[in-house]
Every structure is written in C-alpha cells, then in structure tokens.
Length: 63
Image 1 (cartoon, rainbow, N blue to C red):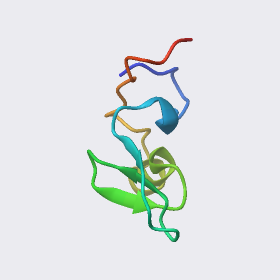
Image 2 (cartoon, rainbow, N blue to C red; image 1 turned 60 degrees about the vertical axis):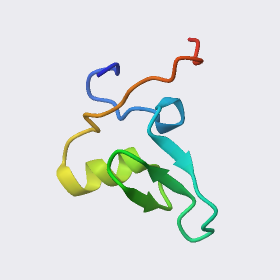
Image 3 (cartoon, rainbow, N blue to C red; image 1 turned 30 degrees about the vertical axis):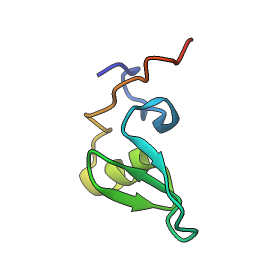
C-alpha cells in the first residue's frame, strides 16, 4: 500500500483502475470487480469504512 495515511488513494494512478464504455458507470476497478460513477476508492470507503487496501501504483507514474 503506497498512500498517505488518512487519505484515499488516487485511482487514476492505480494499476487496477479502468475506464469503461458504459456512460452510466464510467469508472471501474478490475480487482474488486466494481463499476461506478465515482472513483472506485470512494465506493470502497463508502461500503467498508476503510480506504482501499489494494492500491498499486502504475509503473509509469512519476511524482
């Protein structure tokens, strides 16, 4: 897990994040198998009360 304590991870920088063709649910997480309007990390927090434990930074992302 590579994220700041107390903050939701940025799904755009995660290897599990995908963009879908479904206009109703444009964002998805391959690992959790969810499609949603919000960022998947928001949905994970909303449903579990914890920030996403599966965040893995893409190799091509620089900070």
